[in-house]
Length: 460
Image 1 (cartoon, rainbow, N blue to C red):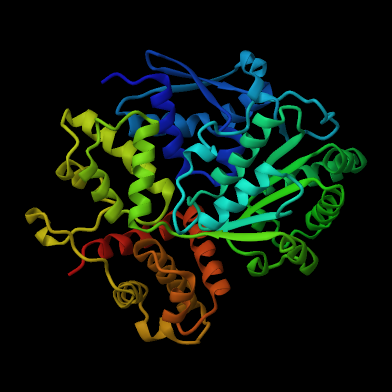
Image 2: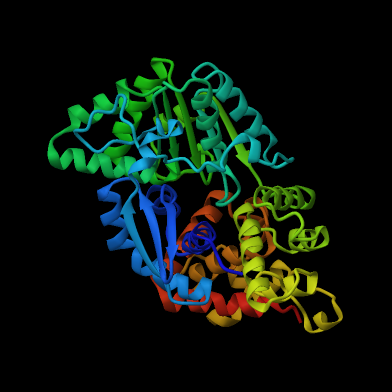
């Protein structure tokens, strides 16, 4: 099956999400659109020349390597400015400006993912409160739940809901002035404004020319005092003017370490809503929606969707990624999509015991098993991981065990804390973040964690 440019880019973008930080993907790669697949060259359209140069210098080589892995053949990835995108009505959406640029009526490339609408958001028990609040905000921005603060683990739909609000408001009020950005970009703009002595322009842009302010990942403001100062005053100016503010984070405001109490207080003024892990029925519904969106209803049988939903539990993003991987595997093997094929294609996601040949999947490992494997590999005892001791020899493996308990077992933060000596969930969140950062920065550490993960994937 020959791939289209859109299909090739979808697969590359999905693979890039596992290699790059979420804010980087949202800022630089989500706005990119495929233009053409010409032989061994994938041509991608970026918003402007700056985005072209940035993506070429920072991401082109990675995407080229991923193409070889994901598509099975070498592919050169090139970027160019896609001029015609600025002519589309839905692109009259305001992105965080570069310092010194006039924000009002700035026509910019679409920073929104067109798939992130209320229509494509699947509501279940784990997200119904956040969804209802987002709908209310979209109906009456600045009047209901201001700010709206949505929190939850990575890949559960926070960004989807935030962008759905923007899509709904822009569809009804095309002239509205909105800013959608990651906290990381706000931080960078503050730093640049300080260096270039243009804080007056910066404050004018963010505090007087915005109707809806949507900021992803505000936990990145942690410990950044100057940025928090600017964010505090920006928040106050917009809120007092009746402008809508929507924020997302991986944890509730009071659990963000290093966040000033005055910001915590303001983030809690409106509605704080969480998004949790979807249950089985919700996961099946999400996969069916994904299949419907991509017109795959006849390609992937219901029993295969259920099989995936039963054994992949960590996030919506991973569920959707399994669909892409399964279809690619089926294409490469020239086989129909069946449960047996899914078991082969998704072997790294689905834990099997030695009896898998009989079609029986192994149960998930217990948290005791996780502690036992990690303790042995790090040369400590499981009792040490559950103790109150805070020596480095115990802290690192304890954090790894917490990370694997969350990833493999889908345990709630409170449950993990209780299993590791009664620690509070903010400590657990710090541990999860620390392991993710260390895995990204240290290949040997990442390999060590992966070896533990693989051992746990086969329960004996």
